Image 1 (tube, rainbow, N blue to C red):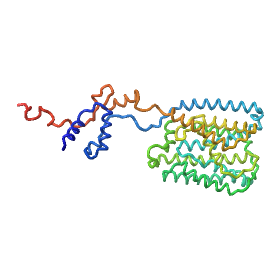
Image 2 (image 1 turned 90 degrees about the vertical axis):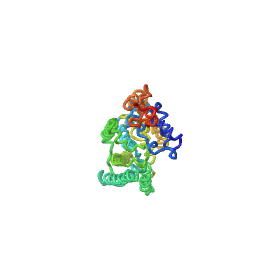
Image 3 (image 1 turned 120 degrees about the vertical axis):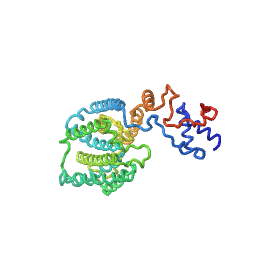
Length: 409
């Protein structure tokens, strides 16, 4: 054994006084396999180090602050609409407004739930359009006979997509985009607009429909504010190696999110078709995907999953509903795709805000680091005591008084 290697081994058995130096040595050990022993390349420490990955805690203050801004914006748009036409906020025009809000709200709820679960459902718009065609063509047979088949087909498709996502560990957006393309084929089989055949009018239950959406939005936001539930739902949030995100613990929320978001989209398409006097026009439905996801992001739901607010979805949907009516009264003629793109872009900015200020304080700073270090063997005010328990003491041959010249007689 060379002198340098012997010296290095003796030095590594001595007390480490600098944690940073120890980390550098360990890193060197991992790369210098031609000179170091296996025992040196895999050191075991008992000291507590700061956590590398987040533990799922989130600060809701940023969400509440942003929701105040959304509330103010909703009030401003409502004032502009009232100044343009005060009758727009009175019945019977108010009933149509609430029906539109309920449909947009269901799309946003589905989008927000899938985002929180880490599997954004890009098929909600095409599904809503397909459900609108299904209702328009079969509504003369009754509401149930027109709605139930769409719910069954949508649920079956959502379960298939969920199985693909969970078993193959593929991104939710990719799997749902493939499903969206298939649904678009169904819608584009129509070459002309389809007039609604039935006579069911949802404006008679306008307050009930919008109230149900508002209740679901607040209930979902409230449950999402509970830490264990939020972490469970967002278990598929991307981090680390994507191939390791396929446990049964994360599979259940993925299935629930994709299933409910699909059913919400079917309900939204049915309400939109029934509440409009215009025929259902063939298209892709992707503009409604953009609006639903954009409003969910704008309401404070993170594009990365898990994080979200309490009132943001309700305020964002209300503001969008008022804006669409205001835009129609002013005859601005803004394309839905343009509105969707604008809302989506704003939502991405909100996501950056939520991710930056909604996370907990970094572990390993201040009192957290001192508390963690006190559980180990290293203390910042006593660097001399940081070592690895169980390290062998210097070899007897290294001590002058243990040799033949230092023996006690």
